[in-house]
Image 1 (cartoon, one colour):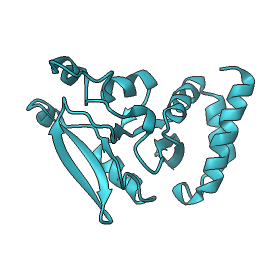
Image 2 (image 1 turned 180 degrees about the horizontal axis):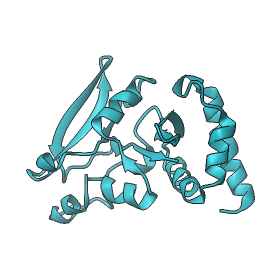
Image 3 (image 1 turned 135 degrees about the vertical axis):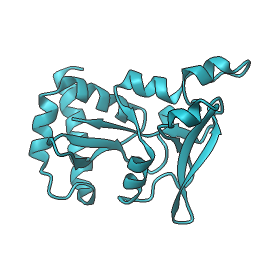
Length: 180
């Protein structure tokens, strides 16, 4: 990414940041910008989140001072839909294989799938996935049995469901996070 593309991306992030202060009270943009300027790899991952429709924004800061960015698009990111859960699930499909998987794509983007706790925390900042759903990090014991977990928000509540890890749907993607 060249300097003008980087500046355009950062302007977009700043605009989203300033328009959604309820997601990150007490965090100044100048500190976020300084952290991004010092970490080109993180900026590349955030660009991938943006390009796939995730609308990443800061949702907090951890004890070490790192900022947590998360996909904050109202619905699951459009550029990450129709994916099964992981590579093993994709390989196990005999026909109609999806083009990719949530775990593989997240890894390629340099981000983490949200765990259930992180997904529930995101939902305290707004109403997300009211018409779609998102794969979440699945515990090994569930995955070992062939399943995978996903979440959505319906009727004002957050629900966690299970599905075969090989399944994929046009309205299911994944949400990711990145610590910078």
